[in-house]
Image (cartoon, rainbow, N blue to C red; front, top):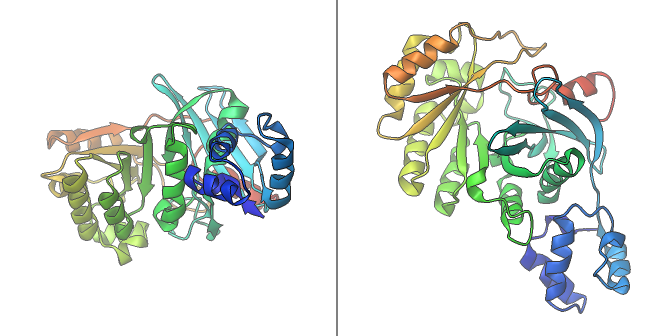
Length: 343
């Protein structure tokens, strides 16, 4: 069966043209798909004969909210979406003064093996399609009633490990006849897959690149993040400098504060040294406890932030949202796996 929702508008128009349909049908169907249509019957301005033909050839598999948690503190909503094949991924709706942000997953599971993350414990199952990424945005918006203005690809999975599908999703969600979410309102995270960073630099997209750094020195970063053994932190910073030179876009560096591991003053000093000549924002993240992991939240976050700022580095502490629910990446899916529910 054909996955229409993973098609760009030109691809969809070409497909419908092969069925003998005029070009304007592509825009009509594309619009319905990007409004979250759950069946072809909903497409009221599409001829019945075409709707029946699409039902025969194509598939619409809207996700099912297997679990939903709503924070009583700040209204953050965590979804565990069950996909058409029974696998599950997470999305989180976060409410800010400037608008609503949805954090989405790019893969079922993750193969990167970061030692402080719940998403990677059971490994990677498969990549998500562009349509499955789009559905997380659409159905989070549809279920919550909160219009989504910003997207972050920081959920389960490594976006650069599924970059072709991620780029297609970005084209679809950015399209004026779709959700029309501007690239400047989209952040894409990577744990440091350098070929992906180089490819993004060549494309020149106006999104925000977020690099999960978590340590500025190779011994510590290799301990925390196996990716560092393939793409060392020195090479990663060189790729980031090249990215900024090519695009002019400031990079955000994500930094989970781990007690006694990556929160020393000398590590703050090294971050500043490696950022020299490139504007960067360091986002300090209070660590979430993961039952299977030995790491604990740092007690030096404020001191580390002050040390960075003493070097002229912009550093903020991420505001904790959804603290009374399983809002941290991978936690709800992991809990569901342990209970023997859908994966």
